[in-house]
Image 1 (cartoon, one colour):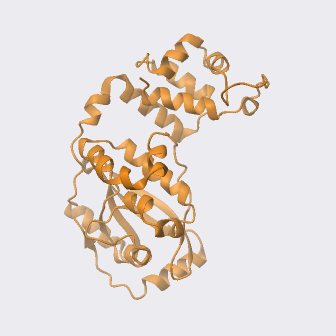
Image 2: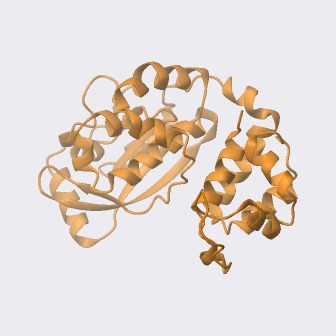
Image 3: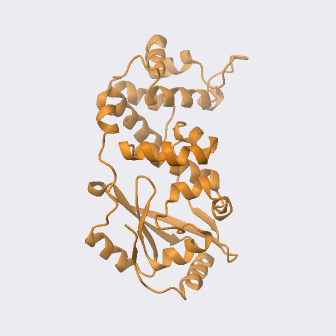
Length: 278
């Protein structure tokens, strides 16, 4: 049985072309990417040890080995952080991690006050499941017309994978889908596992399940929205993590002048009233 760490290392090895690292092409092979011997040599470890890591038979690689693998694969900062995280949960923390407390749905008064200070800007509070727990009127003005806030318990992850309008609303739907699946995987708990197993996976289909275990570290560039009113919105995302609550405040900022004008137009008729859903 494999491990998240082994799966990620193997996936990165398979997706790395030898030429990109200055290595010679060794002819046709059954699987794409780097050979184990090439990666092991670059990382300064034995092929046997690399095989044990990839197959999940070694669950406690040292920090030096993890860093060596990151260097050998030329990982960027987000992927290096993810590799260290996978090494941590693979090395014995996994069982405790999977029993983490269910994500809280209430939003602390001070967090709600922070949102009020951001009115009429675009801001929301979410948890690790993608539940939208509170939002500004500006956020509702921009996302509500696309159906994101429909229902009593709006959820961004469910919307992305099950609502056909999401594929039109998000100009880069594939990138957003990668982000949502990655964030859900990174925040597992008994409640989140039950939720996506019972409610999301059966209706989201292979687009969701493939991404959930693919360990694709998202780039999180400019968020591009095609608003139903005809506006193309290019938005920057600033995230304030709330570790004690397992929540985050996400603020969307116009990335250019045309987007700023469109946001002003969309928010012009919105009432400056914070909505707390939880």
